[in-house]
Amino acid sequence: MNDKRVRALREGVCKRPGAVAYWMSRDQRAGDNWALLLAQRIALQHRVPLVVVFCLVPSFLGATMRQYGFMLGGLEEVERDLAEKDIPFYLVQGSPEEALPDFVKMHGIGVLVTDFDPLRIKRKWKEGVVRRVTVPFHEVDAHNIVPCWWASRKQEYAAHTFRPKVRRALPEFLDEVPPVKKHPYPSKERMHMVDWDGVRVALPVDRSIPEVDWVKPGEKAARQRMEAFLAEKLATYDESRNDPNRDGQSSLSPYLHFGHISAQRVAIEVTRRGLDRTLAEPFLEELIVRGELSDNFCFHNPRYDSVEGFPEWARRTLEEHRADRREYVYSAERFERAETHDELWNAAQRQMVVSGKMHGYMRMYWAKKILEWTESAEKALDVACYLNDRYELDGRDPNGYVGVAWSVGGVHDRAWASRAVFGKIRYMSYKGCRSKFDVDEYVARWSSVKPEPVSP
Ligand code: FAD
Ligand code: FO1
Image (cartoon, rainbow, N blue to C red):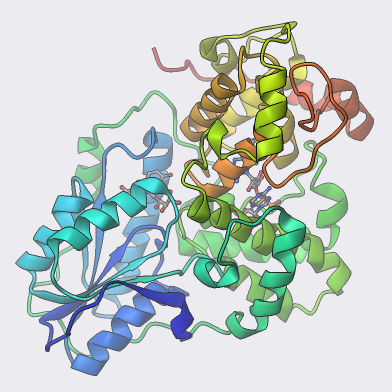
């Protein structure tokens, strides 16, 4: 494995550890997981057991049972897959800053490994753990193909400045991922399985938003969906992906968000098919360049979810138009209930509320209209992030914060002709949508479904 994927959060001399632990968080899978592979490599070197621990926090950025249910389903599969390799899986609950140091002490862990995530909450968790443990603690980027800290040393301005760097580094990192071995040094502790039903029942999360059934969680389901997409849709992805009436996207984002599949696996399988590069390119651009650009933004810009994180030209233009008259102004509740004057916007909101996944094209229109119909960019950002993270299965993700910041604040975009409220932020219109796809068909499809009652 390429050691550029690893960085030390805490150095430390590693005497013979009692066991090596992989603290799993972003990359919730047993296969294709560089963090797990590093932990196993260290455990094999010291001829000690390897364990995996996941810390379940009951309130992650406003997630509801819709997202927790999906995640727990995937973790149950991880536990089974690891048990077959004699690698015990532990579920601990509470705040990671306490729960992980306790786990390290209780299980005599001598080396701790975790996976990379640029979100603020994750950095805070890890800083807390670093302060309380004394063992070596490594972080591995198992999400990106080119490790975030290698792709670029600074916040990139746009995809066109970032693309050459990622493309140049790709050959070094887009290598086959070896399987995790059956671990030859079993833990002395009795292998126990988690009471998943008990965990699910006891979880104190908002249950007012129903789980979705069109997508099954876990690594196996993720691979099946990837195979189906590659076989049936990859070739027509470029011409169908921007039509919300066609199911032309891969629907892999919930799996990539929870780490049930890695972008590396998807990219390897795309390349293995030897499809004409012009056909595969548009998909790989989104999967790799756009996906890694989101991590780059959240990694280098501490204000990735606020107006202060927007580029200077965007902040200025929004400030100049702050007092512009809004033709409509809606509260967060009116937006949430899909009660605006715009049938197309309401249909997109309903698609998200009902299915947990709004079409990618509509997400841009949806967020831009929130800017147009709220009293300020700050309010628009809050409403868009709140609704996105509450209803989207793939929400609470760097891709989401960047998607909203692109729509509302011109992040990774350029200035356009100035207009009311938006200033030079790119505008999208209902008329523009009508020229691109059959708006009536999309509205009809998503207006017939009544969204579940939103939280009381
Ligand atoms: P496909 O088109 O099949 O793309 C495959 C993969 O490429 C995606 O799963 C994703 O990992 C990546 N990708 C595609 N488009 C983008 C993009 N624009 N930026 C970054 N990566 C991309 N994506 C999320 O994962 N979570 C979110 O919460 C989220 N919120 C968004 C909010 C707004 C306002 C906007 C404009 C975009 C948002 N996106 C988000 C990005 C994008 O819309 C989704 O990743 C995509 O629609 C997911 O569906 P898919 O997997 O079927 O996409
Ligand atoms: N990561 C954890 O380590 N523990 C959790 O309990 C947890 C809950 C959770 C709920 C919803 C959600 O969308 C993500 C959640 N995550 C959790 C984080 C997730 O694993 C991803 O690492 C990040 O959200 C992606 O950046």
